[in-house]
Length: 136
Image (tube, rainbow, N blue to C red; front, top):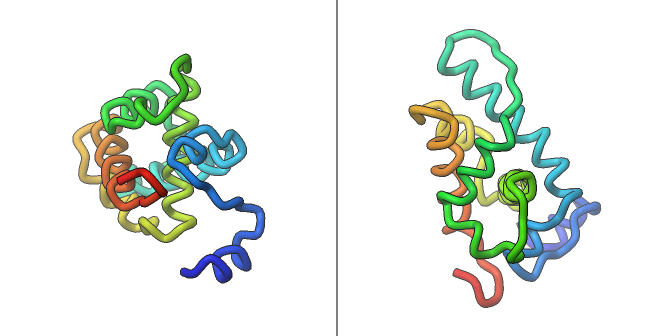
C-alpha cells in the first residue's frame, strides 16, 4: 500500500519516523488494545474449538514486549503498563500498514504454548518486518 492509499484508508494515522514513535503513541495503543483482544479471542476460539472471548492482561504484553527486544526502543523510565501499551501500538500499526494479517496474528497466538510465548513470537515477527530510517 503506498502512502497515498494508506492515508485515504486511515486518515487518522500519522506518519511515523521511528519505532519509538510508534511504541509511545498512546492513541494508537488504545486502538491496539481492541485489536489485540479481538485477535486473542479468535486464537482462543481456534484452540478451544468454540467461540471464546478474552482480554489480554497487561503483564502478558509487557513480558512479551521485553522478550521481543522492544525495551531498548523505549524511553529510559517506563512502567509495565507503558510496555503493554507499546506492544498494543506496534501490533495494530503493523496490521494497519499490512506488515501482518489478522489471520497470521491468530495463527501465531493459537499455536503458542502460552500467551507470553505467542505475543513474543508475534512481536518478534513484526519487529523484523518494519523499517524506519536508522532502524533494521
